[in-house]
Length: 477
Ligand SMILES: CC(C)(COP(=O)(O)OP(=O)(O)OC[C@H]1O[C@@H](n2cnc3c(N)ncnc32)[C@H](O)[C@@H]1OP(=O)(O)O)[C@@H](O)C(=O)NCCC(=O)NCCSC(=O)C[C@@H](O)CCCCCCCCCCCCC(=O)O
Image (cartoon, rainbow, N blue to C red):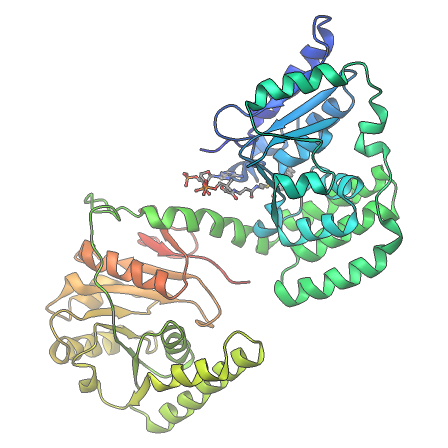
């Protein structure tokens, strides 16, 4: 685990600063991360637990640092992110290895830098840079950070040694001008203009997301309000975000993205010892909202699709809908007209299952009726080549019961997309008792190709289904 600011790390820092201040022998204090990095933020796993609010909270640690009567220098190597950077901003000086990076990624998990980061950074870097870093979650390298006044020195040798040398030079220097809470915000005169420009950008790039807007508001408050009032408002905003559904989803997604590539089944099969097959062509059964959306996901990823719908009128309508969805992507500059045509060229519609004889995978997306699905799977089993994977988009039905209608239960799995499938990145891969590891590996790999970020877990997933074992996940908000 990377260094995160768990409760015991906060406590250690808090006590350490107090001890150093009480010790007459100590004339300056250096904060440095042990091992590979400076802290990369608050512990996201700790949110919503008692530990996250247990004293000393991050702001209390920050105040102790800033109010220290002895100079405190943060010596940054690796990454100083989120709460880690907020701690650094409370220090009187910041030095960093040339290859270090700093940033406020909170917005990417639906939050804002809620330990006074939105109020301190603009006082150091200026508003424009702070808005850019905070509202877009941008990380910057040490050289850029130095150029924007966030760092006081770049180091290319041993960071601790350089920090100690730096400390000897600043001992005895007045500290008030180094306490960011006492300074004014730079380029404050342009606040309204900068806010409007950044807001327009945020609305375009992070459509529908609340956190980037709150980030901007909070940075704007750093100009419009006193330090203390802006901090109070920042607290209110982060709490609102913290208890909202967007941050819950994004934090779930953060961990899901990281655990998916490490999937492992109870039998010992895992991403490391199971080879996926390549899906070159696919069939989708059912041209309703789900089937059409799934077809869009596949053709956009360059996978030729045969869309099967026995109702010819519905099929015709679906083909038009799909073309319309792609037109929407062209309008939003997410694809060119040429790419749209390429997508449509690999989509074929048909009303009979026998056209699926040669595809590598079928995704069934008819309505939730076990008998109907079993009937379709029994037919597919006869029609499709032996290696074809037969997948169901079911959200509630038992994969084993569907698989038992075939003679290839090892090649049956659930691939549950969420509506609208071409927008939502959440995709669950449900395996039954007989699904083979190779099938799981192939479906996982396929999900990745579709741009679905993945999670692999053998835990039950609350709110989804108790027998879920492998989940591809992320929600595109
Ligand atoms: C740091 C990275 C760039 C490293 O990337 P790399 O690719 O090297 O490694 P991985 O990404 O694979 O990560 C390795 C490992 O570490 C885990 N991990 C990483 N970061 C965190 C983290 N911050 N917390 C927990 N775990 C983390 C990761 O999951 C991997 O674990 P695994 O088991 O899979 O090995 C990269 O990791 C990265 O970008 N990390 C994200 C950094 C980030 O987002 N930082 C910001 C965190 S949020 C923050 O700092 C908030 C602060 O601004 C303010 C806090 C105010 C306090 C608020 C109080 C809360 C009150 C809540 C009450 C709510 C009310 C209620 O009860 O409801």
